[in-house]
Image 1 (cartoon, one colour):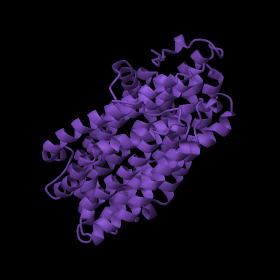
Image 2: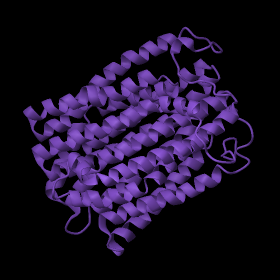
Image 3: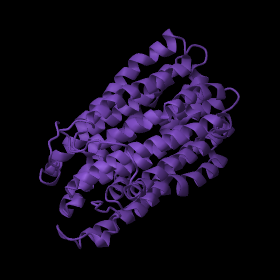
Length: 469
């Protein structure tokens, strides 16, 4: 969609169903493609002759570090995308462009600092996250390349979010598809033809993101875009940065918690099942990640619609987009539940031919997902609070499932069920998180019931401000 010098007013006038399809479908395609992007590396690495199983376990060890990197990216990027959506709803284009400049500067700073620190302490970090003498070499080879290209990764994902928030979800989708397709082509070349193994997979990943980033930077220099880079040095505006980081704190803590939780998972799996158990969880996690990303695609479609209409004080439309997104996300999770319970062996077999690894992953996948049909609306609710700038509620919901519920269960259930107890911890924490979320979303909608379109949202406690100065 070509942008003109006017706000995407369709977000405040078009029917919610049509808007959600328009914005969610590209988001779903993009996020599904993103999950495939991550799965491609695992699939090719799992079939490296002679070392595929251990290489997969080494790759799984890197998940906490990858989650921590993603957490820093979302701290900057998600907050910036939310601010842009609301500022466009307020027709405050000058401040929206300042947010874009801040997004680039902050991503460069956080990406550089994270990379340098992790490269210096890479071996103790990987051992802390569950690497054994058999897997640390594979994990180190992969992460060294990823960390060198970390600034590119942060900028690519951050700018992709802003492209979507500014009213061009199709371009964001196409860029994601571009990276997936190019990574699928380059992976076997670098891994097998050039003989670079797991390091080759990382090189292909960074190279594809670099090409996509070049396109994004070109896009934001076009004069016909509402959102474009201002001339001169991209200096930080700390007032805008503070609002952006505050809004992004919820998803940042969620990803950080995911890093901590994955570390605990790896340690428990290593204790009760060894290296193959870590690899099995890596496979199950990749499969689940694909469905999670579909739900996140719905969330991405909801975010600009909810944010714009909240900024425009159109609460009836805000409520409607939440309800419709939650309904569709639940439908996806029902399908997710059926697929993981009925066809686990077929999905696991894509990643490995090792009988022992397949057996553990098969049982683990089925044990992780018996109540996954409840997860969709809970994820939508968490994102909904974040989209409206309700930082405290978003942070609490982001942390509750992983830190308050999952971590204790990871230590309690394996004492009774062994390695399966690690996998049983996931559905148990899902149930507790859903009950907690239900009470909070009911409370929010009771407050919405006291507001009419056009009223100031003071009773909702939003932290989004009009940065017009």
